[in-house]
Image (cartoon, rainbow, N blue to C red; front, side, top):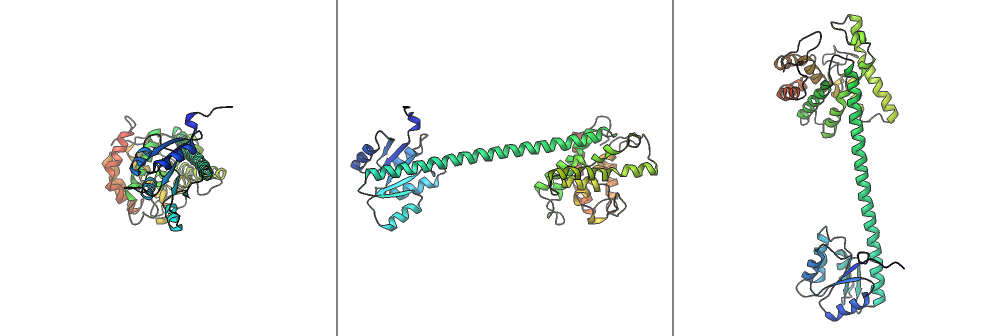
Amino acid sequence: MRRAKIKDIPTILIVDDTPDNVALLSSVLRGIYRTKVALAGEKALELVNRDDAPDLILLDIMMPDLDGYEVCRRLKLEPRTADIPVIFLTAKSDALDEQKGLELGAVDYITKPLSPPIVLARIKTHLHLKSVRDFLRDKNEYLEEEISRRTREINTIQDVTMVAMGSLAETRDNETGNHIRRTQHYLRALAASLKDSPNFRKYLNDETIELLYKSAPLHDIGKVGIPDTILMKPGKLSFDEFEIMKTHTTLGRDAIIEAEKRLNSPNSFLRLAREIAWAHHEKWDGSGYPRALSGDDIPLAARLMGVPDVYDALISERVYKSAFSHERAVSIIGEGSGSHFDPDIVEAFLDISERFREIAQEYGDHGRRAV
């Protein structure tokens, strides 16, 4: 028969100021449990707060200086000792005394004179219940950590996938992968600056701002469907070519919708990406594309994306133009307030335009920008 290891044997702390009671309980528990003894409440608290805390406490109530009620109250206040089962052993047999003990957090209440079989049975029951609680707590902690790990993993996969898809679109354009990084950071900075604004606080919170940041890389995903002869043309597009170029907004929207269908959730993390891809070329005065939306009819995510996208295009060199300075780009966006852009968003942009400059410098393309 396998002998129990010492660490497998539960430890019972006996707290009683009467040596005869301690001797009786020790003899009852001998050979079944390990025991510790405290002849006073303060000593009991000292023993419990050591590294090897007991598995259960047998606690007398009527003790000098610090009675059992107070000892129990203090134990239950401390997270480290709150889960240790406490069984009151006492000559106080009044129902109100028992009620008080249980309200303080004791798991049981045994009156003296003690019956050894009853004491052993109650101890066995409460140690079993404690082991079940401990198992469930550990299992819950493991499951919570596993859920947290899986959630982090899924979020990482989402982030990497969105950046990879966005980068794929950029490789077919005259822009660079750093355009994605810059517009992500521009968008987050701009949204954060508007979070407490009366017109935007209803829509912008930390979670939404983070989703905007993650969604930004897909703003031009539809460009993968535009022919190279148009997408990479080193010059101004003809009217017909531009009409084809404009379809990248709808192509991007449709691609994201197909992805959402597979998620079976129209309110997925891709919702903002869909709104941005479809409407970031709409203009406040209704002169944009693809639907000629105006004002607040343009989704907020797209209105926000419009400013970073235009700013980065202005400060970046293209085959058909030189890079504009930061100051010139800021001036152009300011002039577009109320026509191209939402005036409130432009005002916020002007307030934090230096942050845009910093982001452009941090994630720059050497020799292709003027900031």
